[in-house]
Image (tube, rainbow over all chains, first blue to last red; front, side, top):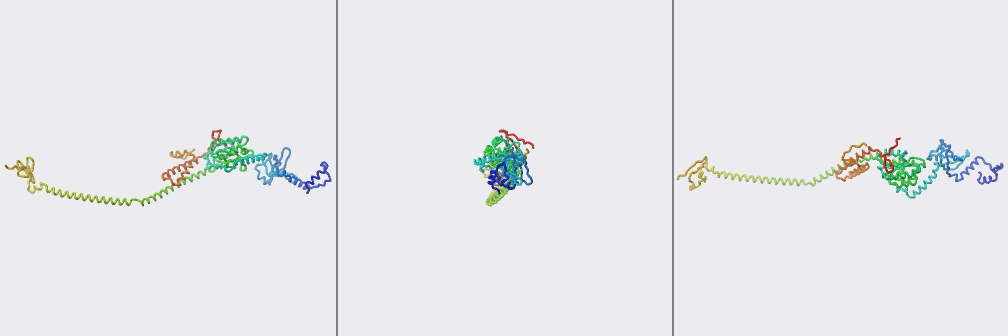
Length: 417
Length: 83
């Protein structure tokens, strides 16, 4: 092994123009290659470096490793990415793509080539954007904008669902389809807004503000997948603050599952995709409501049946108690008393009637015995004065024409002077 | 929109939103299960509950997602592009 210092010292002794045939340094190819490798691998700059360039000669053989060349106007660098790192790639690499690759410089000894062994590859500019993302994130985090206590619950059965997204994107179509399938009872208010480009942040802020005037129960802030630059509006400080300040709770569904934006942190709920945002906004679906209705109807019927049964039991219990305390016995005795009175009064009445009728009999008999007709039949006669009809009961009164009444008729008589 | 046949006396129910009707139905079920109301009131509650259940069911059957778009301060119907 040749030491670093030795090589440098020796080289300085000889003019580069005139290589000495008597140089004491003789190395095999392997040795020199190994030496170069050590040189490169001992340089900290080369072991942790971002390299910017354009991809060419991209290939991904069956091994799963990725091979390509990064180049710019005047140089090129061979690159390799091992299978395990390649599996974590978020973007599909292709020739002509401007990227930033992170890795270390290594030497591939069999071909005497140095190359970048990359472990991260991202679109060019992403590094700077990411730094900005981190700066803004920690600033807003320190302000408490992302605090868990700020998160509001999403209503289980929203009536009005607000949507802020592009009116023409697939994200909107996905969300509407999901809402239509899960909760067609809902009313949707769309506040259309561009979702990328410089005009997007102020437009998103305005859309959120005008939507909140309609007092929706929940707001879906969404955008389909795209590059990190495409999603950048959702990392804009103005938009993030508008989300945190929204009167209605916000569900943020931007990009794909692996994309995180600051709006995701500020929102009350993060959804991995627009479709998922629509699902999270409809925790209660039409099916749930139908099930609920069926169970309510069943409970309604059984509660009434129970109630009626309870009332019946209660009523019959009352009836028994009523019978127990009933004045029936007293009523019966009252009846008896009454009957006795009636009987007594009847017999008293009969007695009176009998007495009366006996009395009447006696009187009749006496009356009968007093009937003057009866006396006539025994030979007596009734003499009356013709002139005035007065009964002649003494000699002094017998004068003039008189009528004599006997049992079977009358005749006139005159007193001799 | 087809509506299930409902009687005139339940007109007030038809003015309810789904959420209001469901909430009232829920309240009625709970109150009936509580069993504190007089029987006559309970019968009335039950009848109203049944009407509410029918009404909610008809709303669910006929529900169609209503989509509107904000144009400035105004709301206009939103026409989706056909795919």
